[in-house]
Length: 479
Image (cartoon, rainbow, N blue to C red; front, side, top):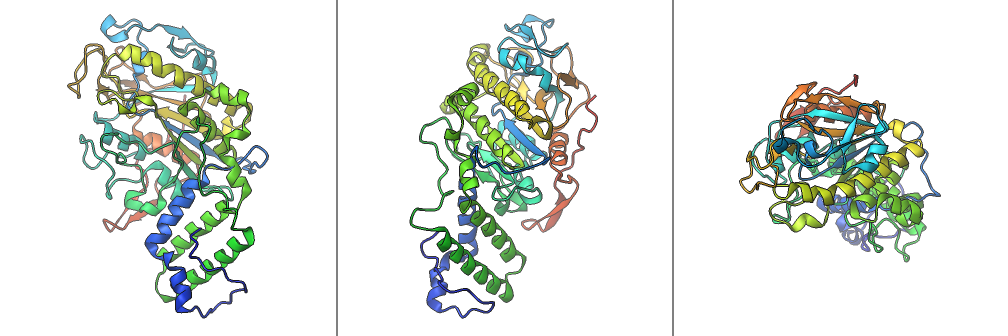
């Protein structure tokens, strides 16, 4: 907490006489200061709960949204076309899985063993072939306002799913309702968040709690969750009391709803920073070495393990954004395999395969999968024909270009039938052949699972208008 906050030794009454010096000592309570502190506190909150401090969540609904940045090749991984021409089907062979009638790529042997828990939604579709705005569409459930551009974050973006859940969802005591980890998606050359990853039109105060860093590192921690050693709990509570009185005075003067929102944010920050349960949730050292190794000793695997710890302790939505050491490649970072598609997948797929399979198995073993909806996808798929130019002229003969017309989402848990295929692409994996699903429909499905009505509206102060939080239709019949 800021050291300028005044520590009162006596109980505060309803109408305090606060001196000018005291007001200056809490001068960080400007609207901007409050929001910045709240966001810092909420970001730090996520590294905390431990095995011995589980939050009883009962039958609460949870969701983990895994974003495979770059657009993985559906044809080479989970919608293979072994009977298509060679320049479509590629070099990988399909393998049998634990689910009758379902095949996956030979690159996914661990996931093949867990496919009885998995639904392959093979009919995702939209019309935007550009990374930035396609990411925004999948993350928000709405087409970007300026489709076809590679836009970074803007005030008139649609709010992200994580922000919607932050505003309209629920959370266990001491925990945020919505967490994003281990980073915000961005193009390294731009150094700014890709569009659609904030509260945006709804307001930045609804941003999810961000946990940045590499959970696989020995020194990984989330700062600010635990009280400093020189700030005992009693002192924190006195500061909280002063803040309540300051907010009361502000509201009585003129601040109204905005002051109440700030007060609510601070209340959550206080709840998080004062609770040992919160501080333990993000402590991966509480996991056994065997469990940590099961997920893989890399950033993605440990991020999924952290996601499991969070939903286990009451966080409604955890968004896990893919990151790996290829982030500095200018031509084809992450899953954006414009060149050397097959060799790149030989490196990428095993990381995903081990971690995602372990995640599904772990959720199942802990009795969490029935109530936790897991969704994994990228912003689009890859072109059916190898070397086909569709959007990026840098695509080489060994690569696959962007392809938004049909791609696959991996869905598990949350009442969705496992060992199942929903929808279909055509014989070349080029277009939807059955049961098209838009990003809006997928967003509505996740929100509905979390008990958030997709049709409810929010006010956008920037535009002076109100909007439904989602325009899609949830999938209710998975047959």
